[in-house]
Image (cartoon, rainbow, N blue to C red):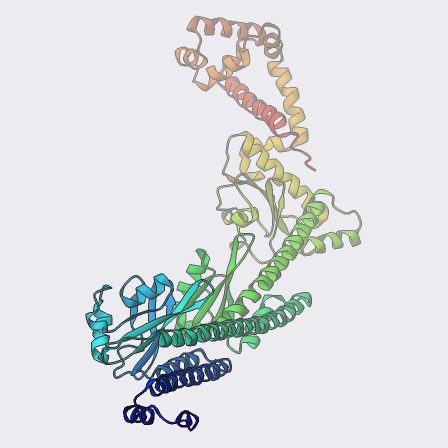
Length: 591
């Protein structure tokens, strides 16, 4: 008892037992061993508690993992300690303490093989006295190679668990064969439990810090975007237009910026990058939103699915530039839409002014000058008025071939063109679209221009009635059919028709026999009976009967060559006049 109270070592107690054998000596020796074991357990628990406290202060995941393996190696007095993490279907060794070679770090192992597989699948500790000769699990080439390099023999592994999840495995290794006691397994398991909580906390903090960092970046981007939006919106509200917006983009990005509507119109400053610009433009035109080609970043500009052009930034591609271009594109599209809407409104207004001038000319000189000015015409100039009809529009007609001062307007299905000219013959070659076009003679002043407009309309009507679609003609070029443009001439034509062909028309109306058609066909076929009968689809005897009826009604003098020619021309004019009035309305006045 005195020896125990003096804290004598086991060696001293053993010497006493040999000198004085007896039950008391044996009991003292066992008591000494139990006290030493408890003292060791107390030391280990104190050390474990100290480690747990230290682990809670580490904020770097890699530093924390290294601290765990260093403490594991010290607590268990082993030659080597290492730890890895579980990632989906594999285990990766991340840190080691006491390693002889670098082969362990980064080693990837399947979770269903080796000692790792037993620990992860069972979520419980496992050990072997000699890893290299252990038959209880399947050996792997990579793991065995590392084990041989480290001369691993006795190996203990415990899982790092968070709830029901295994997030990693902690290993303690001796380079000699060794059994591991329950106390050592419990000690390493306790360390692993503290480590698992600390690791999970650090990773959660890292995730939170990463989210906070991302949130800060997103917030900064949002603030920057809002500032850009405010700046660009102010440009639009002040009516700065596309050019001002592009200059603002260049200022905000600190690099040149351009807006292109055509790949052929490359600015002079980009002539050395024509190939890059052309390629980027074509890709955006074909649907690509953003294209980075060398030192060119291009963004597609479109509205309602309609391609409007490409916004270019010159310089290295980066996220900041892409974001700025993305914010600038809607403002440019809006500005373009406003410009087009304004141009369209102005165009429609001028169309209305020109139509108003030609349809309702003013009576007073002041009102006349105002009408001419609003329509875009010069009071002192002479104009030929052209009316185009058919598959034609302002865009299809074009204005490049017309002289300066030409005004083009759309009115219903027709296009009106006021061309500064002194002769209609000069205007004819300017129309090459395939439309049917009537051209007036030159006129000056509101009243004269209105009359010229009626003349051009009537000319188009006559051309259409005669089946001469696609022709371009002035009233003078209609030849004998010019008579159809005169109201008085048409009244005279009606009187002449009644005088020369009235009996035939009355008989035809009464009996329903097409005598006028038969006469016209007979004269048109050179008075050949068989050809005429074939054209009319009747028997030749029927034709003879109709000709006899014509002789009876208007006399036989119509068979004289001169008289026959007069009747043939009269019937053709009458038919054209009838078609003109029936198919297109009265051509004399068109409001």
